Image (tube, rainbow, N blue to C red; front, side, top):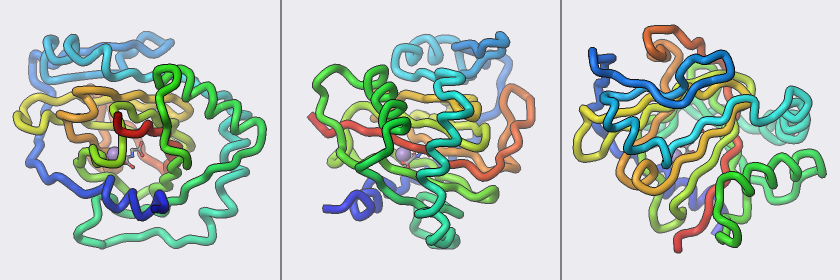
Amino acid sequence: MRLLTLLKRIHKPVYTCSQPCLSSHASSGQLASGGQALISGSSRELVQSLVSQVEVRTAFISEEEEAALLRELEPGLKKKRYEYDHWDDAIHGYRETERVRWTTTCEEVLNRVRSVAFPEGSPLLGPVHVLDLDEKGYIKPHIDSVKFCGNTIAGLSLLSDCIMRLVKEDANNEWLDLMLPRRSLYIMRDQARYNFTHEILKDEDSVFNGQRVPRQRRISVICRNLPG
Ligand code: OGA
Ligand code: MN
């Protein structure tokens, strides 16, 4: 089965009525190099219970590596049109592709992602998933298919900062917001991957710890492993 067919299933949306707000006991985790928190959540306990399952690594790739990825991806993406208004889609304003073979620079970046994100020897989904959200695009809350993807999801963010929101599937007052700076890597595993929906906020909702995070066009490059 081609990855894109599979992604239709990965992307089956789960609609929740998540309305997280920054309550007085919102609490923060991992810090960026400048000291700002990259993870904010509904409670300190929740942040602490998930720190080992959610990671954000800032400046994971250099500007040159980002440019190399873009050079490789843009020609193929530009041939596609952004898709909007499919009511049953988990994603709005996007185009996507998959890629198996990469130039050396890009392959090195991806190997670095694989080596930090996945346990050694963990079988990976062969093709890497590339998702291009336009500036109006966003990803609705969903959980990646457990049938087709394993316990770990790792993604690079190119071109724009954004906010990824995790909301506990059976308790939507429990949530975590991740600030994903441009050129960062996020890793989501285990409970964070199975028991929480994840979404990428649209520009107008893009506020982290009270601070506005403008959302431009964003391309993610996502590696996944296979179910055990
Ligand atoms: C997905 C997804 C997140 C991202 O494609 O299933 O959740 O970083 N993508 O683009
Ligand atoms: Mn997903």
